[in-house]
Length: 111
Image 1 (cartoon, helix red, strand yellow):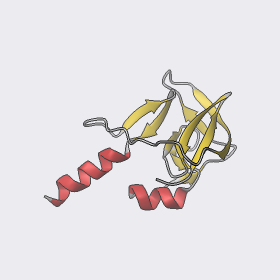
Image 2 (cartoon, rainbow, N blue to C red):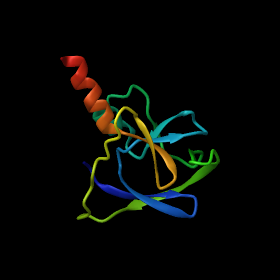
Image 3 (tube, rainbow, N blue to C red):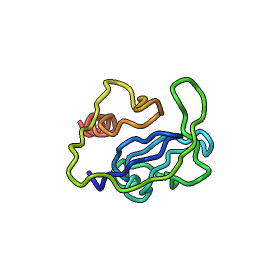
Image 4 (cartoon, helix red, strand yellow):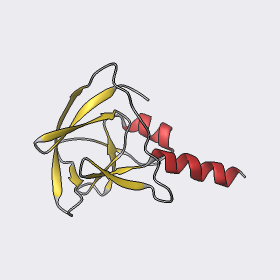
């Protein structure tokens, strides 16, 4: 995992790695603070940078604006959530991607 950031989601924030992919409803694409690192880590062809036009998809179907990012703590524990059979989940109320799903899918293809 890389550096941690507080990702502004409307009037609150989520703590995430810079390469963690979020779904942008406004861009109809995956987005992250570090799109090149996300492409490399997750194997995606297209990841857009988080910017002022980004609107996250909330659990209730509404769009929540990206409101900036600041460096997070250097010593926080990070966990990878594995959700069986599904690549997407809602974290802090917004749609994000499940990296562990990609690793499992790739391992199954190699067998």
